Image (tube, rainbow, N blue to C red; front, top):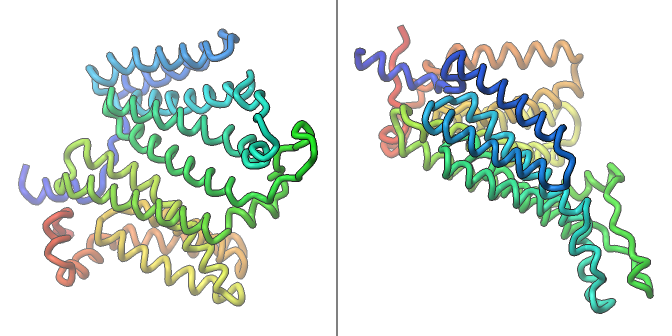
Length: 342
């Protein structure tokens, strides 16, 4: 293989999802096995524990020894989902929430817990299991799912801290959990400055972590590049969504919202070109498309966005060649070298 072919092979950001047809065959069999175990076993906790046991056992042979990528993705997803369901069952079948606090003051202090804990505990369990599965089978998706669960846990805690204050009563038993079913209340809480700032900071930290994985494998030939890819995917919505909500808040009419959205898309595009990763563009595309819907027909907006993305895909390497001379040497040495298109 020539040097040009080697360099071009990793330049296109290949995603290794399937090892072969047998990999797909085993992955489908794993899905049937996990679904059947959940259906046949009705004992509390036992169904999810059996699924987790089967997942680790199957991963030991098919992932660690046979190196099946699609099967690893299926099992990683099953482990993360089982962790969430196991955490939810903890609250469905009784938990520490059934034990009244010793004083009314403590009761007032913890009244947000019935809202937050049923979300936080399942996410923590899922994060621990996913990270443990990553350490066991080295499946990149499991690593990303663990990070995603941690980020969602942080956001759930922040959102819970900004919920409306609970009603106060003389008798602790008269307290009711805080209701967050009102869509307007949900939107106000999610668009709060502290929630958006937390999401954005967490997203930037995870993006920096993904870049750290990228620079460990500049040639993008080892498992490190797959870990980086999935980590970029996790970081993207936490970065893009707060940015576009802030853009929407700054815009004074639908047209200005579209203009600001496109400008932000260009900034994210330049960043994606520098690191040669397209993950951020997917999140940005969704928000630009939503802004276009406010001033244009759905078909026109979709056609505009589709043509723009096709042009970006066709000119990706050419555009990177234009920005390479002005890139700092640090980036040139730690990201894939650009090659001329033929």
